[in-house]
Image 1 (cartoon, rainbow, N blue to C red):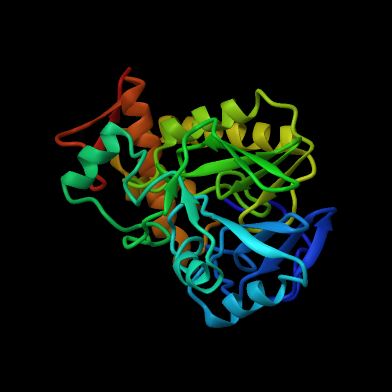
Image 2: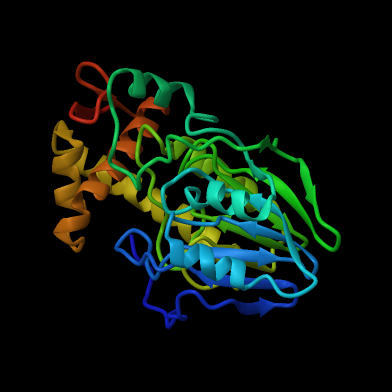
Length: 305
């Protein structure tokens, strides 16, 4: 799941300009799932868009507000998706600065039909935690343009990591949040994550000639085309490994994860199991595998040969 190590280790709480008109404030929430912490972006020179305010940490709220310089105001708060490390601070920031909160929708918006069925059957958890109370002031649609006085953002619906996940195009740059990250492959954990959607979103991003990706975690991705190719290849190699393992006979997602993710720390094996289950659901939709009984995280899966 992890890319080669990088030297990304900026201080928490400091607004750092990463290109003209764009600053990043790193939230103090490092973890195995968030790397150094959540990247909060401040876009603009007068009217500012805050992209992904982050977790509800008072010190991070103070850092965002402190980054607003004389003559500036926060005019938009844009949330890319409703995981607990991205959206919870939005409401308090809005209350403090008066800017509306924009997002694709609430926690279940954009969820695919198969994932909705799994959720109704009781599958939950296994991810980064959902901000169940999140409600945007304004919903945005795929293709919609959000505009400030000297910037525009194009909404690109990129479900996969989460159904309501969006990327934001800013000219030839793209804020990719957790779909394409600067340190690891994205977690795809049903019923919130859908691998079929994830792969389609990767291929959609491939249709554009991007200069740089600004991710939700980690350093800027300066070779976007190569990273997307790596992400797709990484997933296809996992798919091939799962099918190869199933050639030895039916197995559960847990057994497959233990067999395939041999270098994954024990603390992350649960996430690996959910990734495998995401692949199994996708393989089922492709009619290349099936569950023996109801489709569920604990089901035994077999190849369709």
